[in-house]
Image (cartoon, rainbow, N blue to C red):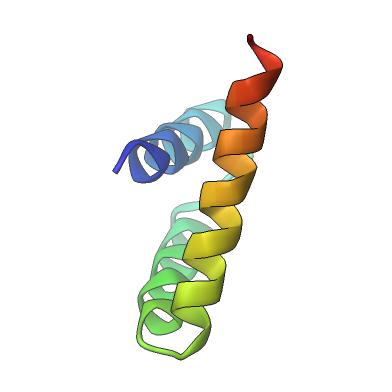
Length: 60
């Protein structure tokens, strides 16, 4: 869940900065929903969990 919040915050930041158009944000969101229904979803989730844990070890 925190990764989803971080991605939403990044999208909100880019939208406010003017770098992300609303249509681009909707396309990214739709892509995320479509990827969640594919067989790649478990691989993407595992890779992102490994990345987050790897980043977490840099702080210690």
